[in-house]
Image 1 (cartoon, helix red, strand yellow):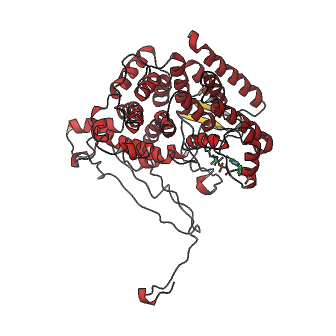
Image 2: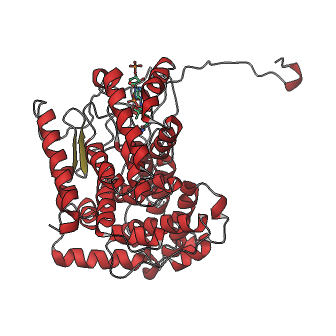
Image 3: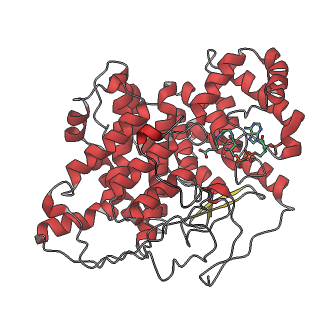
Length: 467
Ligand code: CMC
């Protein structure tokens, strides 16, 4: 154990013990073996309860507070692993050997050099753009650099694709998805040259995933620097992925503690079941678009305040409250106005979010040396206590991953508008892993809506219409 980061490992091990103690009584899930399609499930609006496919990538258990990547517990990964190892695990389904990890790291490092993309990016007024919008554009520019998709030769061939469609109809008929709405693409079709074919294969394969995992970190760091009127920085040859990200962002080589905290934060955000941004990425991939467009849609979905955008909102709320003495009154008012408090609650977790269990104590550790942020942490700790006491424990609403992450990032000198892009820097590992897995047995997503409108309305000319 590294002497300077020993405290961090101890914090994680303590959080692990607490999590196990609190949720041990909840039943363990059974391992699912053969899945027989079609599956019956109860659906709610927003596809709540829907099962979209099978996966080996990751698992979330809301009552036990479990988060699992490829069979490994998130607490163990945070205590002993690194973001590079975890990304490899998610993409490949197994832990790398030291040689495989070395190759993977050097590929990531290679792809963190994005000169052409950054040159294109700087042609836009990035400083005036929302950082997530700039990041989404940046991934599109990376696509330009890596694929032939924008040329005629690079168009996917649809000769062998078959398609049919069901419209939005009243639900008096049973869905017939198994027989209809099938879009299939046979590999190796089309008449593109072998060189282009090779690149196209890469553009929806592993190499493009590596490119994206590396590139999203470089673009995020560059956006942050451009917004504060500084030039982007080249990656540092001797730093880890997390260390390099902080270096490219701030321009300073991080301390071992800063590097390790960022590493843990990246591990914690890498994958999280069938969340909105992952699903968005998969929907786009299922049309046989490409992985750059998929990641762009993941970024777009992640931006919202109900998803990744909550971390920025939390810090704004904490500053608005201003003082821990004002917390009680603030919560009372929020409850009376039926306001959702950012950073609390989760669709899946009905136990304490394991990610917040680690990020909370890490925030506490970092503010010890950061007197400017310490008062904000104290407001957060008081807010957690008050929410849990007034309605949280009863309704099973606990702090989620976004509650303490903003405080952690603030201590690492990350500006608030970059909090949500950092979520993307990590989650791109989950998006790409799940897209790759899904494409092995692709089926275009095509759910239905229940039509509750009218039929047989008579068309009237415009001058006969009344408002
Ligand atoms: N503050 C106060 N009450 C809440 C909150 C909250 N943050 N979240 C849920 N509730 C209450 C809600 O009012 C409802 O109460 P009642 O049954 O009395 O009407 C009950 O809990 C169930 O709420 P819900 O809206 O049905 O829950 P959901 O599963 O649809 O929502 C959520 C999940 C994350 C969208 C929601 O908890 C929320 O809006 N939280 C604040 C935003 C946030 O922190 N988002 C980050 C989520 S975690 C990271 C990520 O996914 O990106």
